[in-house]
Amino acid sequence: MAPTRVQIENAIHEWITQATELPAEQVMWSRQKAPQPTRPYVDMVINRSRSPGTDWLSIDDNPGGDAGEEIKYQQRGSRILTLSLRCFGTDPTGTSEPLEILEKIRDSHLLPSTHDALATVGVGVGAMSDVTALEMIIQSTIIEPRAMMTIELHVARERTSLGTFIETVEVEGTVT
Image (cartoon, rainbow, N blue to C red):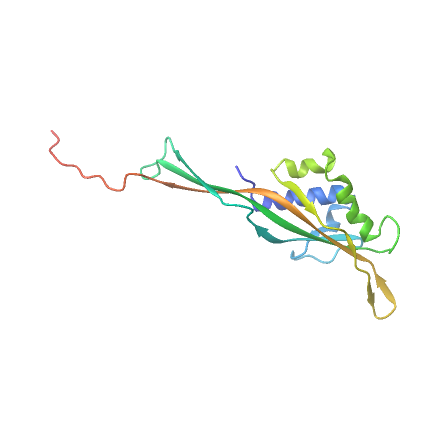
């Protein structure tokens, strides 16, 4: 069974929280309705989904199905999700520097302590971009340290519908 979007998002959140060693409330989805957390924090968004190939269709019997639901059709395929991460820091150097926080994800993505959150729901880690530092100058004096990276995640997709081969039945004759 393919994971739901909520399962995928929860697994990603757990993975990024464990990898960055930030508190859970400092790892957030960018479009959620919540106040900005204290820094440092990581902002996440899945901003792309693509199919690396062609889906396939399985047709199986559906034993015990109601009339008209004797057949189970399952369309299956894989998707590559692009996860974009932005880290907003407090210091431009040291362990709370955004570039260093995001590098922790790359440094630990194969370790069971962080990888298991994804593997449990069937999400695989693919290519990771470079971590790019993006310091911003605000009001000409404040340096706001930021960094960003993208990660490709591999997931299975599945849709199911029920159907029948028998469209109509015509009965002739007399029952006694």
